[in-house]
Image 1 (cartoon, helix red, strand yellow):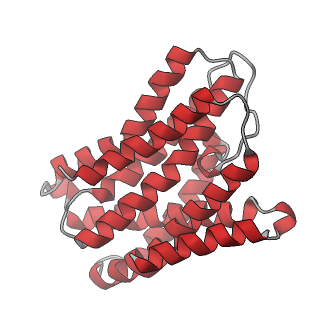
Image 2 (cartoon, rainbow, N blue to C red):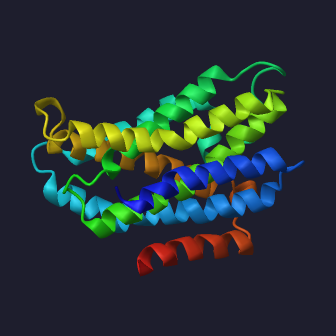
Image 3 (tube, helix red, strand yellow):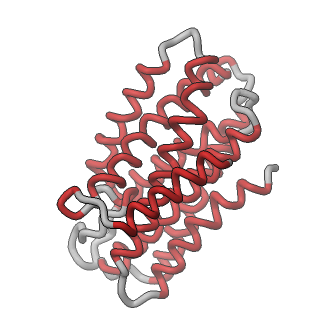
Length: 237
């Protein structure tokens, strides 16, 4: 078991735990972290993963699955209301559990974990980069989810259960991939197509983070710095 898988649990758990402790949300700080994580995820996808995906996936056009992932994320956000890229708007009524949002986020995180197993398609370095990108992206999503649960006056015990469940979803996806590798219905070609699907969701999420969260579609100097750090870190590693 790769010890770096622990990041997939720890970062969203920490994000959710912080949301449980703070009395108010610093939206500007959240947007800066989102800009950093979005830039990192976008850069890793474009520079590191996409070239390998197109080089090795020769049986079926990867572009079809990337496109499908992009639009699948749009459909998924009908249920999640954009929680995965930091939307802090209140959804639902007080004391009402946001079932559709929680299920949608868990499905999203589960699918992200499937191509992260050591299946021999990606190099070790590429797999690690993707783990970092997913973990960084899941932390603010968990923070926003727990903030929503608190706003809806969901009990702390229930919120902690949801926080742990959500933090485990990517690991569940990795486990499914590891167990199923070699089976006829879940061979390397299927995993490559799932990776292309996930990259499509990454492209949608990261571009939405970078542009939708900008006031009047303009970039402040701090946000530009956060984006530059995210891109620079992705290129350095």
